[in-house]
Length: 33
Image 1: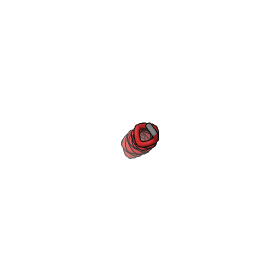
Image 2 (image 1 turned 180 degrees about the horizontal axis):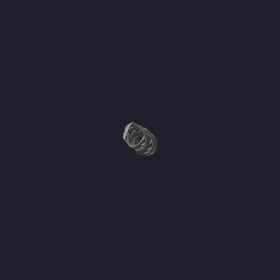
Image 3 (image 1 turned 90 degrees about the horizontal axis):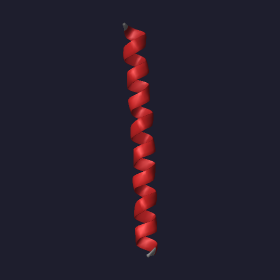
Image 4 (image 1 turned 45 degrees about the vertical axis):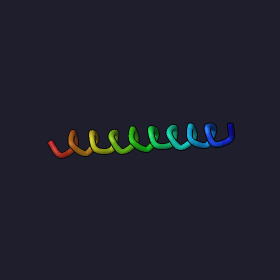
């Protein structure tokens, strides 16, 4: 059960990081235009 909880934590962190990077890229593109 502990492994499942840790895996879920990694997935959550990954999604947060991905969304954060996507937001930065989007802001950079809009700024460059």
